[in-house]
Length: 608
Ligand code: M6R
Image (cartoon, rainbow, N blue to C red; front, side, top):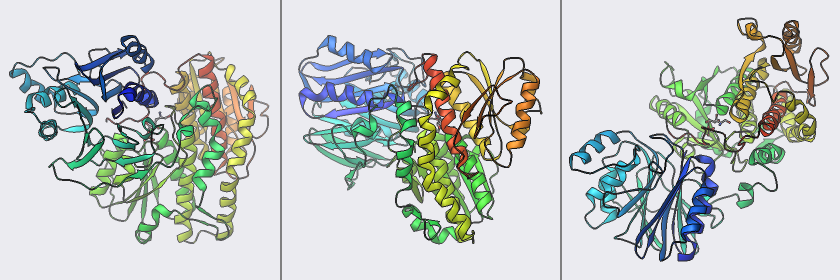
C-alpha cells in the first residue's frame, strides 16, 4: 500500500533511480505518484495522477537541471483524500523548504493539524501526510534530524517517512514505525525503499530498519539511530533473489508469469524441508521453538483474503493429521472475538507480504496472551517475519501481481507440512505420512500438467466472460478452493462471485439459479464427489449452466476442465485451484482489464 523510494548518490542517476524504483513498487499502489529532488535552485518537484509512466513523461518534459543526486519519490494508494495532484506525495512544509513522502497512516493528524492551523499554517491537501511535512517545518531550527525526531515523538499510527530539506542539501532522512523501510547499500549510492523490489536492480545489500529507528544519510555515509537519538549498530543483509524474479520474463502479465512458475516456486518452498525416508518434514525456522511445540494444545491459523483461505485449508489439514484442535481465524475479526488463547496455543500467521496491518494487530493480541506465534511469510525481512517468535518463509520469490496465486499454493502446501510436523510428534502413522509426503514431492509435476492445458482452460473461460454473477461450489478440502476461486474472479475480472460449500446451496443460495446462471463446481474424485454431482444436478434442474473441474468429463455439466487425479484428497485442491486461477486470468484478459493492478486494490494492505 503506497511505495516509497529515496536516493542519495550520483547526480545523473537520481531521476532514473527514483522512477525505476517507483515502477517496481507500483504494484503497491497506483493512483498517483510524485517526486522531489534537491537542485541548485532549491527543490524540483513534480506530481501526477495515475500511473508512474505519467510522472515519468512529465519529468522527461521538464528536464530538471542542477540536481545534486538526492531525492524522494512515492506512488500512492489513496486513504485520506481522493487521488489528485494536491493529495499526491511528496508534501511540503509551509515554506516549501522541507519535503516528505509517507507510507502508513497518522491517526492523530487532525489534532496536529488543528494546532498548526492555530499558528496560521495553511493546508493544501486532504492527506494525513501533509501534517508531518508542516510539523517538521514548524519544528525545524537548522537540524533536520532533530526536527524529525521531535516530530515522530508526536505522531500516533504507522509511518515510514523519507525527508529532504533544501537547507541541508546533502542529507536524506528515513524513519520507520509500523510500516516497512529498508536501506539498499549500493556502490557510491544509498537507496531507501519500502520494499526490496525497488532496489534490487542496483544492489542486493540491505539494512532492514526496525520500528523506532531513523536512518540519517549524508551523501554516501549513513547512521542509524533510535527515536531517542541513540546510535544503533545494524547488520547488512543480502537479498536472496535477483532482478529476474521481479520481471515479467516475456509473459504478458506478472499474473500469468506467477501462475506459470508455480512448479518451480513450489520446489523452492520444499527445498531442504522433506525427509522422505523418515516420513517427516523439517523446518529450520521452527527449530528454536521445538520444545514449545511439544506443549501445544491448540492451533490457530491466522490470515485475511487469500491467506485466510489457505488458513482454512490448514485448519482441515491440522484437524485431519493431529489430535490438536485447530481453527482458522480471519485477522480483522480476531481482536473482536473471545479467543481463549494462552501459552499453549500455537498461532501461525499466514501472510504473503508480511505487512498486513490486520494480521499484525492480531499477532500483537496473541502475543499479549503469551501464545507461541510463528509466521508463514513470503517476503523476507518483512514486519511479520520480524515480530514472530519463529517462522517459515515460502521462498517462492517476489509476487508482484496484486492478486495472489503462487503464494496461496505455497502457503497451503507448507501448512500441510506444518500439520505433518505436529502429527508426527503425536504418532501420525509412518506409512500414511510417507504417502502424503510423496504426494507433496510430486505436486509440482501435477501442477505443471494443468498448466499445459491452459489453452483449453482459456476456451472455457471465454464462455463465462459475459457473466455478472457466479457460484463456486466445493466441499471438504475444496471448500476453501471455492472461496479462493471466487475471490480471484472478483478481484481480477470484477465479476460478482460467491464461494460456497456444495452443502449450503439448498439453504437459500439456490434461489438465485435461473436459466443461464453459471456455477463452477469442483467435483474431483474424492469422498464428496457424489454430493457434488448431486449439486450439479440441482443446478441443471433449474436450467443453470455448470462448468465442472473434475478428473474426467462430467456428463451433466455444460463444460468440464479435466485435471489430473493425483491420488491425494488433501493435495488435489491445490491442483484444482490452478484451473481456477487460469479461468480468472483469461476472463480478465478477455474483458481487457488491468490484470496486474486491478482497480481499488493494493498488494499489501498496511492500514486497518
Ligand atoms: O500479504 P497478505 O497475504 O497478508 O495479504 C492478505 C490479503 O490482502 C491478500 O491475500 C488479498 O486478498 C489478495 N489481493 C488476494 O489475491
